[in-house]
Amino acid sequence: MKKLLLLSAIIFSTSVFAQTDVFSAARSGDTKAIAQLYALNADTINAENQQGYTPLILACYYNQTAVLELLMQYKVALNETPNSPTALQAASYKGFKDCVKLLLDYGANPNIVDANGTSPLIYAVQFNHTEIVGLLLKKGASVTYKDPNGFTAINYAENLGLTEILAMLKSN
Image (cartoon, rainbow, N blue to C red):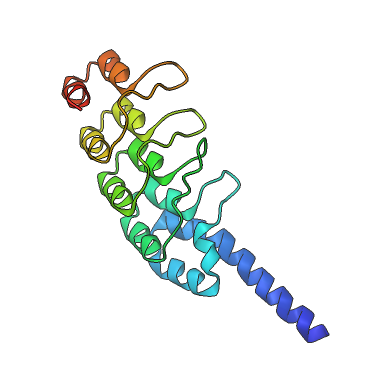
């Protein structure tokens, strides 16, 4: 009985370690650690930290494309629950074009909104990420979606004087 309890404790502590440490590995781009943690517990790649961020979101927020590619090989969930953070929002906000492209190619929804009611397209417009706006539009991002303030991506582009982005949005 003691051996069974000890084995259970080791498995549990390994699982907790994997669930916690995977976030640091995703932020820092440590693909070796991600692979090791995945081997210990495949569910680790879809874990959420206290802020609701997954390793995928953190990899995209810190522009860790190698981690993103590895997670996609492991068939990571995109975490596209409305009103929660997503990897596509993080990459669009930060302006990481390669992450946005990889996510969209993987099937990320360009129209999901976060808890603020902000879409990836609106983030890309607000931060003047022209190339990302183009990528999102090609994958069907809505130019007519209104955020809780009643503004569309077009409204933000007009208010910010972003003529190139405004032309892209209006031609869509």
